[in-house]
Amino acid sequence: KLLAQARKLLSAGLPAPVPVGQNLSPNGKIFKAYCYLRHEAKYGQAKLASEMTALRDINDETQLGNHFAEDFIAVGLPYYNVPTGSPDRCLAAALMKSFDTRFRELGPEGRGWYGTADEPA
Image: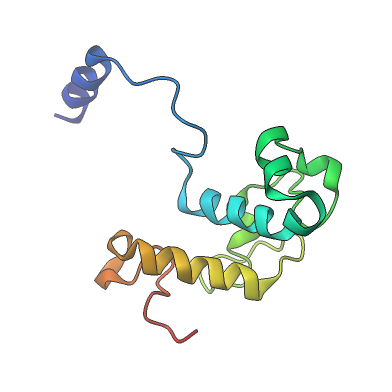
């Protein structure tokens, strides 16, 4: 049944290209927001958005090397602990809570993807 549904979707054609940022995972969205907020003072949002400055050129805690956004964002969470960089945990936690508050339906019991929607700020 799943393969038949996939075939139907693929036969109908997929919208391409997908707008930038439209298909990011929750961790990807949090990491993107973190990078914008972390580098806004030095580079400005307009430059970050228009020039897409490579993180390897910034060389700070947001440079992931051989890791994924999940490794950076999930540091310290009880279910995932792969130490990567040294993110500002307060900023990351605030972004996760903001995401969960906006997208409650993505997690069990309406608490969001990270389960923080109902936690105190």
